[in-house]
Image (cartoon, rainbow over all chains, first blue to last red; front, side):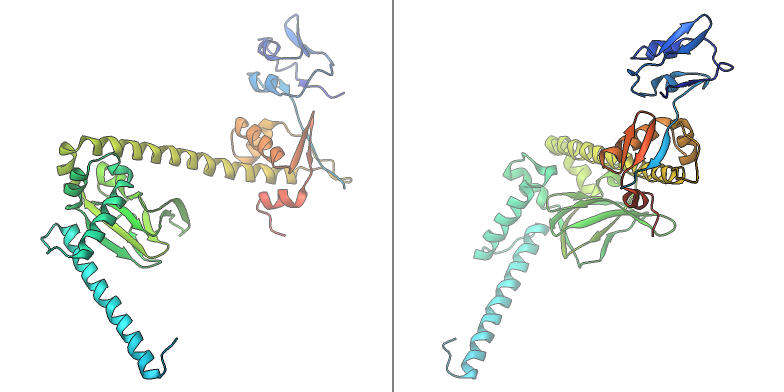
Length: 67
Length: 272
């Protein structure tokens, strides 16, 4: 399933995203952050918002509903 | 009509018109005397007009809670001004030296952009005031005012207000209240104005990046949408929530579904 994306080259291990995450999808693994696949992730996008380097992104797919 | 002949009917109508005209003449004389404070002999019409004016002033926010004596002394400083529908009573940028109170009719207060577009700020109904801010702050009209129907105003010159304020503490207090409410309204309007435009631009971005069967457009983060729409990331979030609330889109976990494409195109300002 789709989860937030991490660009490890940009991640500086500050851990802000881990602190803000409400569903436990993000954990500190040594010096970088790891994403855990979980259905609890509601795509609140706050991790993306707090990340100072833009390492974490929560992109949207835009589709038109067919009737 | 019970009149037998056309001549009798005409006499009847002529008499009615004459009575109406005479009554209007005396009313206007008495009215004029009231607002200019000049002496006028006691006449039945005078009492009716004084009662109307006193009750009107009680409804004006500036004069709320004042005694009859206070109102009487203030009304001697007022002068009347009328305007036809479509007539301008204030011009943006002109010198501001008079506060107006709407007696009858409605005035539209608006600003005009350099390319001629009109932005309405608010409407003023009977009991409301016009041009308060520039009279007390600076000197030029901040906006124009137009009569949207036949309009009757009472004017109070800046010099009169300055003379009245020390004598009537309630006047200053009421004015503060009116101006504060005006500020609240304008702040909300600014918010709407800037916000609305952003929502329209976000709608446009969504339509441009919507995937079709033969065109797999890239996914977008809110930051990317913000850059494309020329706004901040926080505004994109709000815009998306508003569009979802209005039923134009549906927000899913990692997907934005355009539910009502024609409506979204209208929101984006795309015609056709």
